[in-house]
Image (cartoon, helix red, strand yellow):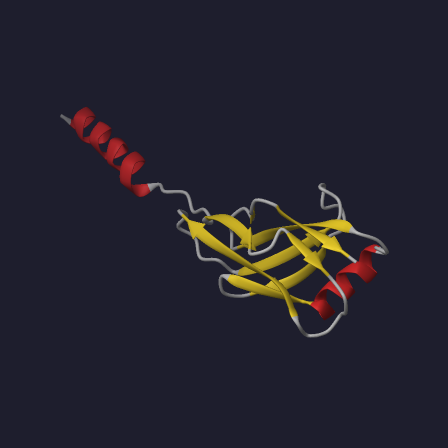
Length: 132
């Protein structure tokens, strides 16, 4: 009888008591795949939005990472809150100055989501072709 009670307790804990905390998965999207830049004003160039699915850990901070290489070796990073981000001409100018871009290029964007005591997660990558 004691063996059955121990077995039942172990089974109960394995099913209900030991859920590992994890951040939700993030899906990033953009409302543009190509942008022509004539000036670097406060005009909106494109919008980013994302959705969270699954997970049971609280999101601490979301970072939008911009890069010109697919490896994201040295991304340009901006903090974000909510589920969207607006990229204006002045933002793009700062991004381009960071990477030394002088001609048409492909801007690659992803999100980094962090929480407390859980592994960080990255979103999918979106690409926006920039015509200068």
